[in-house]
Image 1 (cartoon, rainbow, N blue to C red):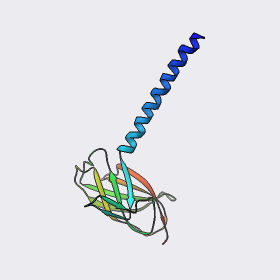
Image 2 (image 1 turned 45 degrees about the horizontal axis):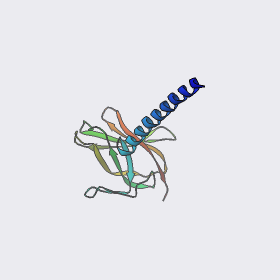
Image 3 (image 1 turned 120 degrees about the vertical axis):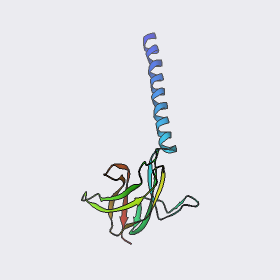
Length: 138
């Protein structure tokens, strides 16, 4: 019986340790880390993202990216891929400064309904961060 009791305490300790590690990882994801969001209107002076969502009607919106490290380049693309076909829908070139970690991209236009993957790319095609969005007809 003491063998079971001794091993039970070890098992409980391991479970508690795993829960703590997973909890810290989840907390890090919530508090920081990389993130791409979409909004109807972004006001840079107040850092206010109005109408944040992943579902919009056709039109223009702002893509916001929060990176854990500086982007490191001055030329990037916002690349939009149609999820149904896998084909590139549109690509928007932007100029940024290499030290940026928080970047917003205005006037990204969606004229056709569909589900899309939006990616921030460095020149040469390296994906920095991506997220999915759904566009519906007005």
